[in-house]
Length: 80
Image (cartoon, rainbow, N blue to C red; front, side, top):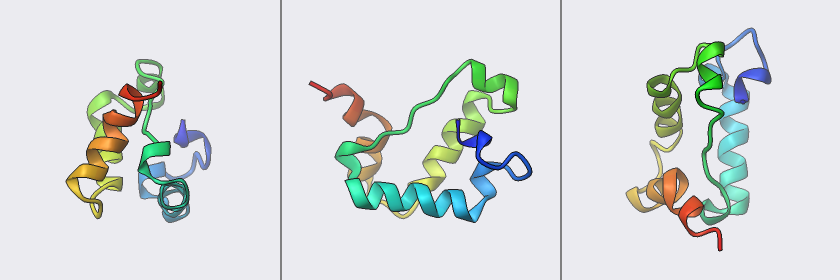
């Protein structure tokens, strides 16, 4: 629901939002963070799955494949 932060700019283009998300991941580590969505409700705000998950993936561009896998799925699978 990052699109609620600043409706004037798409969150995936907003440097403050991007920097904040990356800072949170750095502070807590990828094993304590994960990307989630409110899909299919997100579609109503202009965020179909391909756009949403593409934006999540771009946030991870500088991370290694292991971190990307953790953030996009492994953390959720290992919540116990």
